[in-house]
Length: 73
Image (cartoon, rainbow, N blue to C red; front, side, top):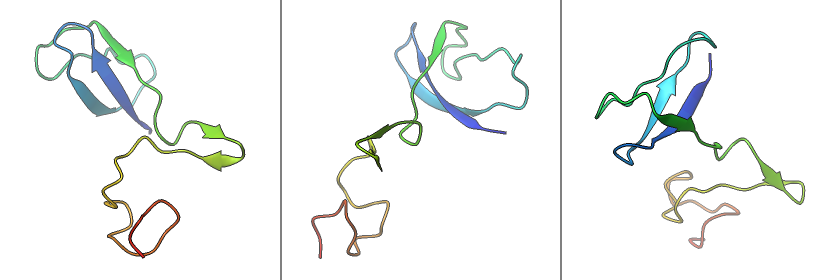
């Protein structure tokens, strides 16, 4: 049961949704519009054999420890 990221075309909000069935109709939680697009997840693509993330560089994913995406050592 994947969690997908969506963008609402009406109110421009972005949200995540756990999709239980592939036929499930997705609506925006803010404005209830059905005009939503599924976005490409940060885990859904790679470049040059290494996965790329669209996450901010705040080191939130590694709790500010040394890792390949942090500037904190």
